[in-house]
Length: 195
Image (cartoon, rainbow, N blue to C red; front, side, top):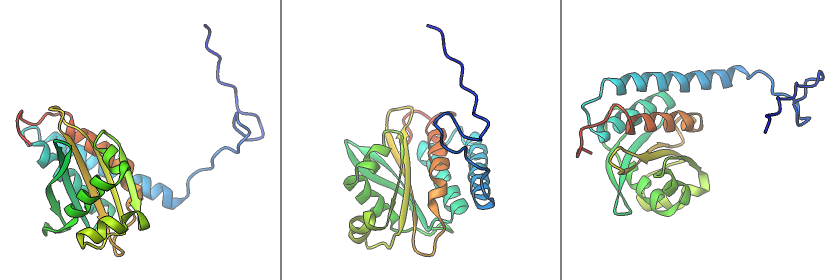
């Protein structure tokens, strides 16, 4: 079977579906994309030096850096133990221990998109979708982004970033967080048997 070449765009600036072609992004979109790219570059550089660290340490670095770059008010790392989420690390900026792990556990238990993230995807939950989990934990949260996947030992992990009403816009960090989490779960490999 012979492949058909892509049809050239008509001269009126419309694409093959007759939809207008996208215009160049405005400054705010470029700034957000630049911030996400710089975060990924920095965290990949960090991970390259962490070849002897555990997956938990690597994911904590991903979360800590993302919290700083995207203005989150806290982060959490958890894994699945026989189908149940277990929180292993959580922090607020400055290294202060905090309670966002309870929100992550409530989300991972209640929301299908959060449960699916353990399989290697990401999610964003905002506003009403957080009413139950945030109330159950007693932690004020307005937005959560999360990303997860499998490590080399087939253990499933989830990293969540949290924003309260004073925090930045986490939506821009969703794809960057997923890329960084996948890198942390892969190579260079953590020692076998280590979390």
